[in-house]
Length: 433
Image (cartoon, rainbow, N blue to C red; front, side):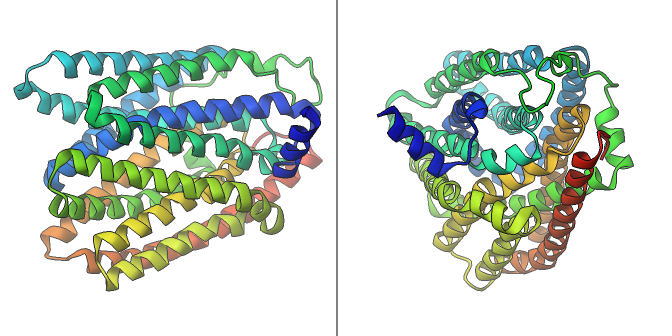
């Protein structure tokens, strides 16, 4: 029986004997992180849909300000602690926040719940990026470039399964136990993530198994993550990549919020609808990770794999431009988000494997969180400006097309640059991109 499962595993992923433990721990880690987030994501999205475009824009502005403060605090912690200390601290901080929200939602009067809801929207929008980027920073630090191409697709399957379980839990239980009680489910999953860190093996990707530098404090200044981005064309390209992705994602999100608010009036029904969308996204993501991701990275490399999702986005916005219906937008969102998680995310994380350790945590944190929320800001306020100017869903969809064309070109450049940097790391011991 053990031989059977080993054979099945080896067909699904090209894993070496010394990598099995770390791979499965990464799988579990990703499952609980994404599962915990997707339990509460529909609650956040429902708050966004109820708020309207005007309030949503201001809430996203609040997210950006909060993200600036959070990045500075995170960099300060990273500079002084090893990864096995600061990662559990980060997850337990968010767990404590969830418990506070649970208490507020259960005890405050209905008149005071609006402020709590807005705060929860802002908090989840910060939380979701940090818990994911900390996870992937750890993965890109633990696995090298070659291992990442082989194993990140399989590790991402854990996240896909978590993303499937989370929405199902919410859709099934939100009407029975209420949104507040679901927060405790998310908190429990984050605690499992914090506990899993201590079971990972040492930095086995290095030839020197006795090298203890991996568990030393990362070092550097609080602002080095930002300054390194502006000094390195490669890091700046990664920053712009996230910027273009989030601008177009925010436009699609606002379109979704607009259409769901006007076409689905019942709050509980709307939350369940959004949860089902998440389920379909993660189901399709799972199929992509099982049958596409590893093969695409192996056959075509990082650049071509990266450009697939922008191409799909371009086609989707063109379709919405001609037929602006909720049903078509729902299909577009499912396909786009599934491609993001199944194809783009693993390929994008391989881009970070060629960075030095400090940049894997600090610059990556800025890129994956601050750049993401700057893109949200640009997307939110430009969408509101388009809307105020009288432009509808069709016109905004067509505006997205040339933006995505630039995104496609950047994806190809990043893929070529990553291959060159990976080659340099093989030939020399120099660690700077």
